[in-house]
Image 1 (spheres, rainbow, N blue to C red):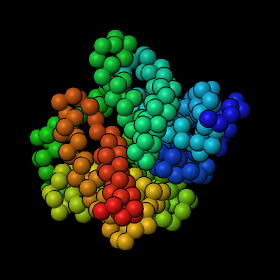
Image 2: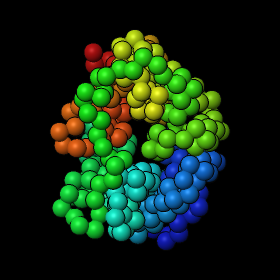
Image 3: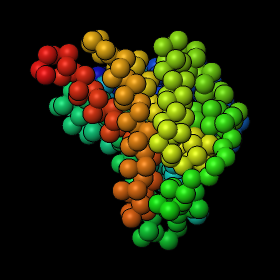
Length: 306
């Protein structure tokens, strides 16, 4: 464990925001924060405070200093805070959001430790686990309750495919949906944040959107969900993870990346339908499952085990 210097630096906080997209870049975090504030000042402030709380909590419990400085203890807190803000109603929803941001740090420590045994990163699974727990716990609470935003898409609605779609929306809303935001302007700032981090991340992110559109059309998946960006944001994350951050140099490496992107699109309705009886949203679970699967495959191929 790294030594705790008791200082929460602005760079660590901003990196905590950019790490939602697996990017360690202060300017990326700053541009993303601007986009969130433009979409909703309430969401932007919540994201900033949640990143501060996550980073501060990591310092206080003596977490690894290098990981803290990279923002690795902030991004799950950011997503948890935003999710609680949007998915809950009631006087105590802000309390739940910020408590969730703190709890996400402890989940991150635990899940990182477990995942490391399999040579895998924790990714956004701490955020998913905490958010699911809070949603389920809210059924027994009186000061907070679920908002309309948490309504899980029924199977009938998911399979009822409209014939028309706003292609512009399908192309440009996707990036905002990573942060649960349905906003063109927010998406453009997030895309700008990805762009300043490097050309490889940018190409992979855009490729994720393109792959999503192609697969949805070929397979006849719900076009309205595509328009809302619900099929693309997980694919964006998978493509950045597999094609940039964790890219493995093996024969046909980018073929694995493309297939991972395709599988992510297909996993989205699968996981959504599986979780519907529990009343839980899929969140970024398609990204997590697919990335863990393909990291295991590519690492095995690199070692020549198959």
